[in-house]
Image (cartoon, rainbow, N blue to C red; front, top):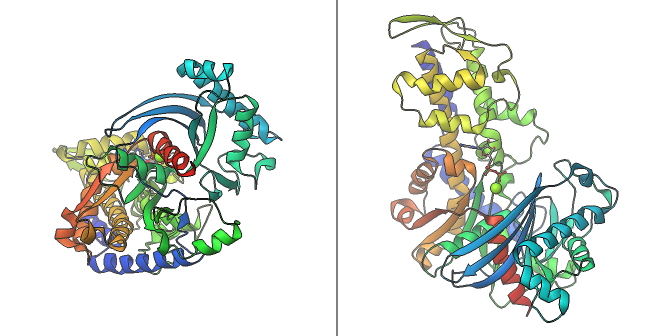
Length: 494
Ligand code: ADP
Ligand code: MG
């Protein structure tokens, strides 16, 4: 029983109570407002220059490309105008050599060639017609999802701040990445206009807004994958810092007539000062040994990249507990089904390695309803080289998994709930629609339900409000979503 007592003490460290949630929502609301007023705040609240949201009646064919860490995707999306679409795509691994060349045109030229190949393969007629008479066929508007830090200064303009994920092309830094791509597209004479630079959260918002039934639009797009972030629809007049940014950028050209703009919150850095976020010894150690201590503190408690590591540190503490009756995965004998077995852990176990536990481990354990937690024991053996884990150990593991996962969902509810409250949509529209994407929310059992449990505890949402909040999975933000942004960007310029 001693182990159970200690596990209970540990999971209490992960409690994020009703009061905590409400305090955090108030802090989130304050940071939202601050971020709309000035630059360089904790919540960045970045203007995206996307000034409209689709309602599902849009039509046409658009291109989208996505340069992530490893692959380059090209796709064309045809919107049928009835919430449905068809999508054709190709994917290539970006050659290593091009990630580190001296000249940007080598990489962007390669990307343009991939677009050319895609058009030849999937839009042969259009391509041939254009080759014959370059000005006789309409150009495809293209949405460019570029998953590196950029400082966006217009709907299709953004300067590369720095490369990440193994890319290193010095020449491109500080340049407008849309311009770099357009130049190579033009050099090949392709009928393509880079119409929009796309952030994946905005893509998620757009994709959900187009596909959800009814002609109402979506308020918020949120990602709970490797990282976490959200983008939402804001009234243009509320973005107080826009005037200053307009002046800096010489009066950027965007459609002001809709009175709205999507704002990319970059909420991973909410409360970096830890005024309201929970902070256990495991959170502190994770942060200290991360490559960016003190930064992305919300993300480090919420997203897929980190939950496995929080759990690992908690399990490691329990494994190293000085009381042998408490220490898990050790010397223990257990008497399951009247059989006595000895538990051992391999010294090479991932339990002892930073990032050694993937967040999918949590999903499997959270889901486990098997007798004596047979499935948890199996995955302990497979992933952590724990031989013959006792049921008592497995129960402790499951308790900690649940605590880490549930806390993440309750924190997620803080960001989502605050955006819903700030929008006043529950009062004005009678509902608020949220599009979500990412493996964590898609696969972690009960993640949405834990979010909703917290919604019901939030002042300003409650039981009634929770019923009016719709949450729907919106996959393919970088395909469908980017195409929709290209549509809105193209339309706003004509
Ligand atoms: P990305 O964020 O790169 O677009 P995903 O949305 O697939 O990709 O998220 C990947 C993250 O989700 C990783 O951190 C991984 O650990 C986590 N993950 C993968 N599978 C699961 C799962 N079944 N349950 C919970 N988390 C998962
Ligand atoms: Mg993703």
